[in-house]
Image: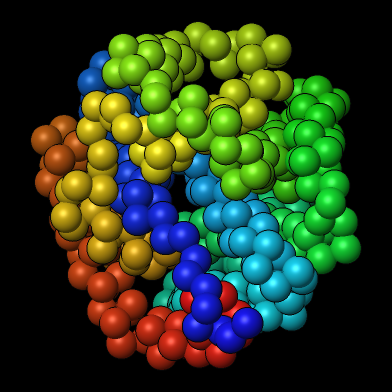
Length: 373
């Protein structure tokens, strides 16, 4: 069959979910103050605490989304072509991830050089090889994350890249066993989290700890792709049941500060919230009785398309704004509202221009390595 014979499924709802995921990450990073009075205030402490929780949960949501999409697309490719083009997949991922990633890395090392040669002090960064080989998360586990603020965020891209390679190889040669392998990596993740229960850096940053996110995402894709009866039940879910699921998710989030004091919950936390994320993906994509489809919000779809840039640039904009207006953090109103709004708008602008004038130049080559269109 010709290349033009196929039309892949486009998940328009997922762009909006990506943007919402970024909002969660943004809230996890954006609250700052140098004032002890503000830091100790109940409002600031509450927002800061929940922001940190929301930030890590939202990163996990991106892991689930990524796994869901690449598994779905791979199953689609295998269905229509009887094979999975490993090289083409890796090239497509590289064209999406590498240009912006290595630009951020270049900026980080340039700043380190300028600070060490022309200004007092230096932001000592991990070895460049940690960024080139996408193993920054392991360096953080060994040495911590006390280095240039926006460069720390590259850890999650390291985790994603490691999973892309592992999962692409798995799909290429073991695609008949994806269902079982998905369960296997979920259990590996749970056992890892049990073993490292007292090691917070490993729990947060090790790829094995995040395998549960990826496993749930891939299972969700397999269920949605291969089991029509599962989709039929999902499509007919009543609004009351959908509302119940969302209330349950919200309740768990509100109780997180208390739940995180329990070792059992710490072990299952990432898998549990991955199940919640998977429900949201399926509900937004397939349910006929959804309370609200986030894709109806016009600009969310576009902001979702530039969400990778939003993630990569927001740390830089936080750094710049704090350097230029750090005195603003001495006011509670400024710390919680003015600075976050200023950082958010500036991040949107730079991400838009980066996508339009830089990233797109690489993305246009992806079609050369895509069989199904």
